[in-house]
Length: 196
Image (cartoon, rainbow, N blue to C red; front, side, top):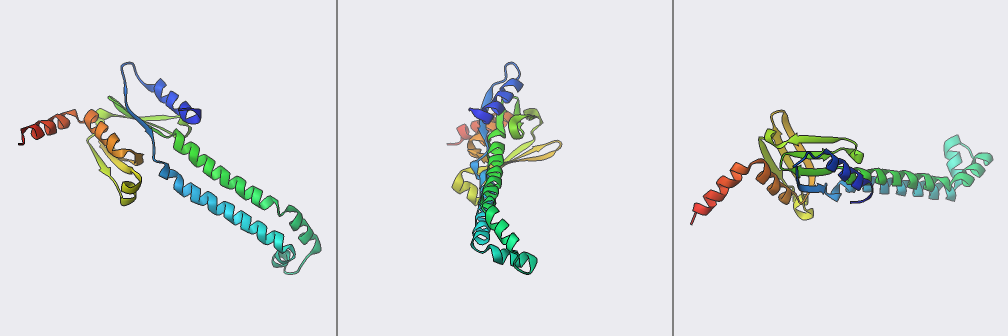
């Protein structure tokens, strides 16, 4: 990983204890970017539409604001109307940029001892010791089946934790079950071996 995602990965590497090995590492599914992308598109389209309206009829816009056309207002509006799409597209780029940085730096790392989750920008690392896990469930909606993501619900003594939109959730769930609940895995393998 490079860039800001690489910084978050280095923070996780520094948090590992001696003898601790990564079993799974990944980012959340890029479907996280869908909402911000739609928002950025709406802001950009609205700013371009406002520019077209203000540029096409500045006297009409001034009349709507002041209840009568003001020549100075119309001249000023037509001269600054080009700023509208630049400001709108800048806001749209900022919305999308923050969402991409958030997505790239929120890593999910599973070791044989704990589950590590980085916060936005990778500045903080939350961890969950695997010995405290009581249950893990995989919940996959129809869109998750189509696009390859799911939600992992973890039960701990303190309550439940939801890891939403996990990419390759079935692979992550399989590794988590094997690492966190090894006796259950051994029992299920023994039962499967006994069946004809």
